[in-house]
Image 1 (cartoon, rainbow, N blue to C red):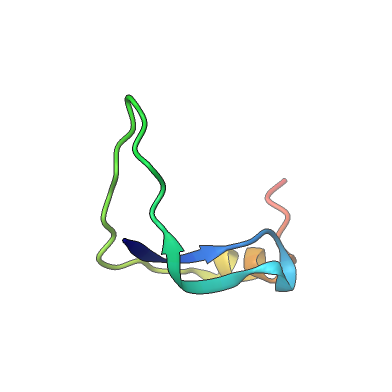
Image 2 (cartoon, helix red, strand yellow):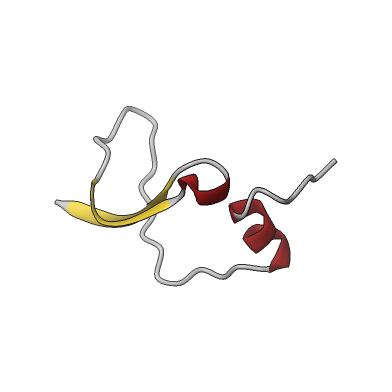
Length: 54
């Protein structure tokens, strides 16, 4: 079973994958299915590596 995932770090290191493996469940873990998500300006700057929250 696979899922869509945004994987990476900062700047251009991000990769959108439609076939990422779903992690195995561990004791005490919770799995949440996301139906929708939103981005704001700070999120977009963070993806570009230009956001400093300090």
